[in-house]
Amino acid sequence: MSVQNFKPTLWEGALLHNFHSVSTADAVCVKPSEINGNKVIFNRVGAGTIKDYEGTIEWDDINTTPIEMTFDKKKYFAFSLDDCDKAQTKADVMSATTAEHSALLAETYDKDFYTTLSGNVKASHKIGSASSKKKVTQVSIYDYIVDLGTILSKAKVPKTERYVTVDAEILGLLSKDKRFTDNPQVLVNGVVNGQVINGMQVVCTEEKPAGIVIAHHKSAIGAAKQLDKMEAMRLQSAFADGVRGLCMYGSKILRDDGIAVLYYEIGTAADIDPINVKVANTESDPVHTKTVTG
Image 1 (cartoon, helix red, strand yellow):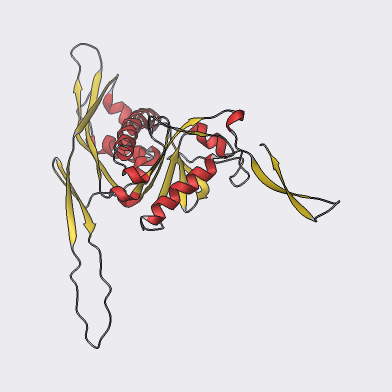
Image 2: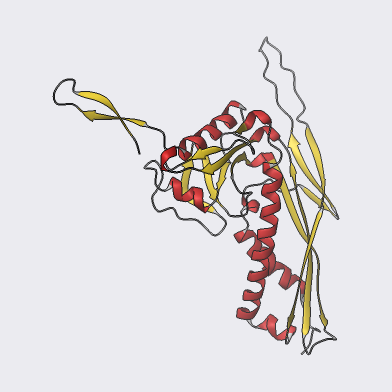
């Protein structure tokens, strides 16, 4: 039993590698341009200008606005091992340990990220409200998500790197719509492989707040984390070694016009609106419209 050969960078690397693989938030946010101790800096590029050409050219400076964030959340983990040094040499033991703790860290990180994202939406970018939720079904949910993308488009946010985040229940409803796939493949970081609605990559996670679908552009929010401490010690209360780590993290809204939210509750069959479909009419007109319920 020993901690003499403990290699913090080895554990940190394994933890962060696993974290980046499983964190949904880490895939859909702006990364900081600088981390300096407890302070994080994101750079936002200023708007450009277009001018009439009249024979001469005036050059504009490209300005970046630094947006600062202080790590406001701290989480730690601590666990014991029979022998820390031996665990480092056994890939299966170390991999299982770091995978478990990085997954738990990612859940906490993602939950706080989506709370920040959904809590800073402009009133005009909301469909429904917390007190007046839209009832959604397999017939209507796809169209509501299309509307979220339209809100982002009218706000002139960039058309690439848009995301819409749902949970498993909403993903199940989408799977019943013929415009969506009936067998979605959710990657380990929550991205639903190949599924795009109105220019937004579909993402699935249970860490978002309940009862909302969140659409956003990547530039809307910055997030960062840092393993501040990683150390091992001989435990006095057990015949074992202890490993502990401290993680600091936080998220910051960079542009609130890049977020749109649907407040919903799951409807029943009675809430499915009539839909119009075209069917053949052999007796009179070649085609006529018939109202049916889905």
